Length: 148
Image 1 (cartoon, rainbow, N blue to C red):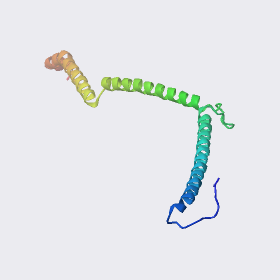
Image 2 (tube, one colour; image 1 turned 135 degrees about the vertical axis):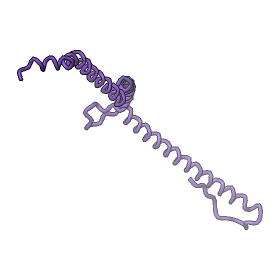
Image 3 (spheres, rainbow, N blue to C red; image 1 turned 180 degrees about the horizontal axis):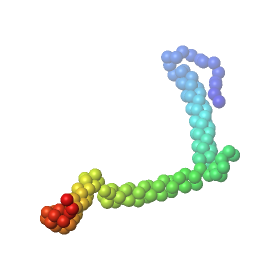
Image 4 (tube, rainbow, N blue to C red; image 1 turned 180 degrees about the vertical axis):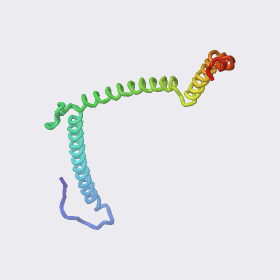
């Protein structure tokens, strides 16, 4: 509240201005007190809104939420699930690395195919030497015994 005194007396050039300065000083103090009160009210409102928001996120139930709405608990569950997912992904990556190291590559498959082909051709050649070579050696004798 502003404190006012009577009308201004005297000029602004001398000690007669002291009461007017005192009055202005009192008015400024009243204005500062009013602003401090508004500031306190504003801070209280901000604190109240902050508490409401904090309560809403920490445990308030939402009417349309099927899981109960406890935001803090839901967040904790999600963090736990993410940790479990990371552990599972690590295990999967380890398995994939092992599978890749044991996997048949194109180069190894080509080496195996060449080895199998050499074995088959070698086996066929052995059969030719064991069974056909004596027949070919004795072919003139066999042809003599055939009717002409």
